[in-house]
Length: 298
Image (cartoon, rainbow, N blue to C red; front, side):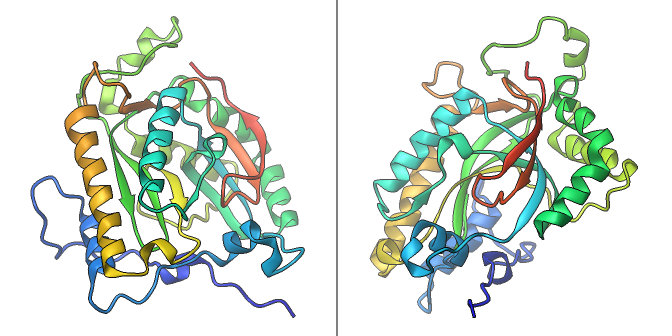
């Protein structure tokens, strides 16, 4: 009998951050995770057993991920992919053994509808939601929301590029922008990523769907990679080198990329630019699955 695998989520619960003491500008989750990496009683990273088997077929020949999902994905525009790839390159120079998300798989989970279901269950959910799918896929065309201030966030299982909702920062995104939507853009930053998630939730509920997401706390992030071995983080010196590299990258992002129209990389993302939302089903955990409908970009 095949072993029962435990998902990384079960070992990696979000914790109360209200008592964390921070330096000015410091990310509370990163501060918490830094303490875990540098703790004298550090035990191990949290290795994803599903991804480990998919990347190393000899561990369990014939293994297939049984966890089917349905989500609304946001697909990064080219300038965000360029930034993500640059960050991956810098991180891999410190930890060569990490698994990196391929750029063609990168996404932001705008709303997770259902996860860890059977294929038949997801097909039933897709049928139930069918009338609402076009509205959801095209929703970002007339409901623009900006994400800014990219920063690497991390924990014991993975690392990601996280964003914050815009609040009056200079507009940096390059063309294309559809010419017939001036009225749409008047809403400015008053319409945030949280409003977008709310609206998609409401669309799904009105279609009769009971939304079942892993994460209640809204997060705007692109997974950059995961740990599949302890080789790069086995010693305190290696772990400190990893944390220092992330700190250095985040300092570079904050001082040279955020709000800088002259930077070599763009630190802004208007969700739906180039591609609308990707209504996605299948084994999605690592960027897989298939598209039911892709919305119109601008």
